[in-house]
Image 1 (cartoon, helix red, strand yellow):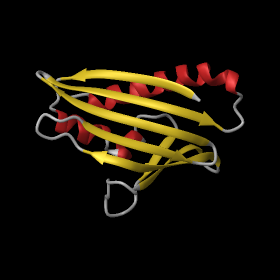
Image 2 (spheres, helix red, strand yellow):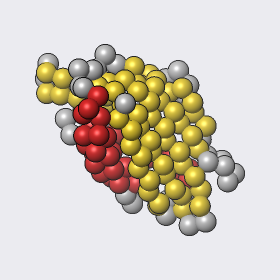
Image 3 (cartoon, helix red, strand yellow):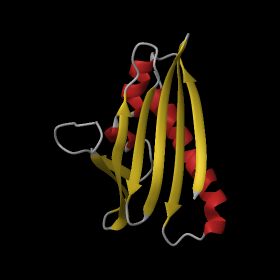
Amino acid sequence: MALFRIERFTPLPAAEAWRRVTDWERHGGTVPLTSVTVPAGGSTGPGTVFVARTGVGPLGFDDPMEVVRWTPPAAGRAGVCRLEKRGSVVRGQASIDVCPTGSGSHVIWVEELRVRLLPRWADPLLAAAGRRVFSRELGVLLED
């Protein structure tokens, strides 16, 4: 599996950083050629499944993700969101932690990815590409 970790410090309060990094539809606006569909009703807790579609027209793939843990930050406690990637192309898991600090919050995003048909020797390349794409995404999501 390709593994990468991204960290950002932001002046945003933990609740606002959490709201931004767990606004799944907004993720689609930051990743090239990707749109995100969230089920009607806006559920966000455990069991929620949303789909990131990457591609152009019929050429692409779906990346369904299920929220398996949802603990928003509160009263000085870190927020933790865990996602399971359950697609036929992309498998793995993601973890987004939002920790309050004295001057805002600290966001930690960790991904473990496995892409079907991609040989294991390519994992370091996949991790580097993921780190680059998701670093940019996290920066956009946390911008003022």
